Image 1 (cartoon, rainbow, N blue to C red):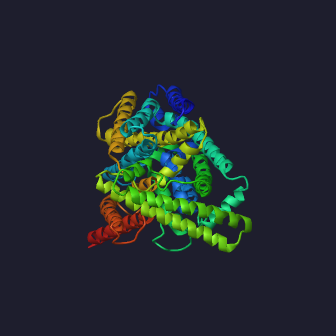
Image 2 (cartoon, rainbow, N blue to C red):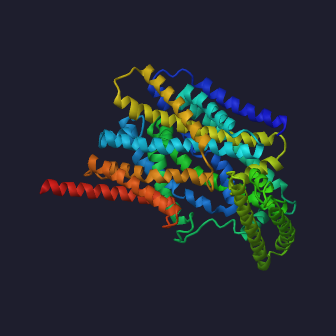
Image 3 (tube, helix red, strand yellow):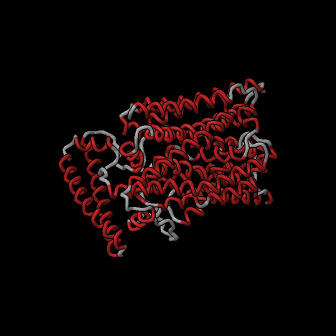
Length: 565
């Protein structure tokens, strides 16, 4: 990185942190600190909701996901508009009428304290882990690519977020997220334009799409019921709807964003805005990844995009084998340019098939390279990530963008990390303060509650940094966050649906059913991980929700029979 990149990166981050801290200083009551004084307009709510969901993982992992697997991941979001409509019609009017600070307050009025506490604790567990991962994700990748100290990066990102989140609470998060989303959108559009400009002059956008399509990257819709395929239309519509209902309707990190709205209408408009814009945004980010793929059809790509992994294998006894694979890849690259040239010139089907075949050969080489990296890491007793999906986009940024824009794109990644983490810390502190501390202690003054909320924000920030410092990479970071959510979300959503629509169900039945369901979902997840069963994580949201409703109804029915007899 050049001096100009450092100036742009540091200036962008400091301006966002400083502005958020200054604009929202001096909250004197809980309403201001936790619900932002109920002053947010619909566009602020919409952008804040999007920024909470769009972490650094989105902008690092999603292009890499498209590079490897194509556009099919967009199906994951197909349930979002459906969920937004349901939340606007059911959740928001209820939350507003009850004037709750957290989603879980409602559960006590409908059931009892233990059910409220259980739901709050389930949220704190999964969101506390997720907060650590949203810090760790950009840190581990920037550390590997730039050679920065990993632990120091974790601390820097965490501390920057803590400063303005502790200072201004919900309003600080909302204010900063507007500017972070502007930086993010600007950076991604610039990246897309630069990718297109770096393609050969005769390769138009249409031809780039043709090349991507011939390589299987433009297969957006999959209507199959194949459980081996994680992302299909049906998993998106069914599993995705349940996941989004859980996330936006019961996860305090999102609920707190729209509870800060001036009115029910502002809250509803904010969520509808998010529902309409989110899928196009994800489509565009995936398209950026596909264009990076097309770029590397004309420019030599590394065998593995993780430089640390390459370094490990080159310092092992497998170095010569790895070099042999690199030579084969170079031969494939030369042949591929010829085949693509013929395909673009003639659009003949046989050349389209040849493009697909040669990219498949290249993928097989990459699989062989991963195997060598894993053997090399075992040989040296070094833990290194051989799967390089999360490194594709950052590699492109650092090696192909001009000075200044590298700093801007790194600011995009770190801004996204900060915006998502800030929402999570804000929500974790609010839930701890309102659902656990306030509910179980003697009455405190408004000023005392604000101070306690700030201390809890700081504490959760330290926890998140701690999780980031001990975390390990999964196959793909964006999947890891969604997997963690899916383990808990279905159960929590089921509790809320029981509260809304099953008036005959009582507290004990729900509480017992929720405990049993959580154990079942964890077992199902582990069985899938060990390949005993085939149940992709998206379906856990649907399964968990149905199981808790079924068990609660069963227990309540049995209780009624006992009373009747």
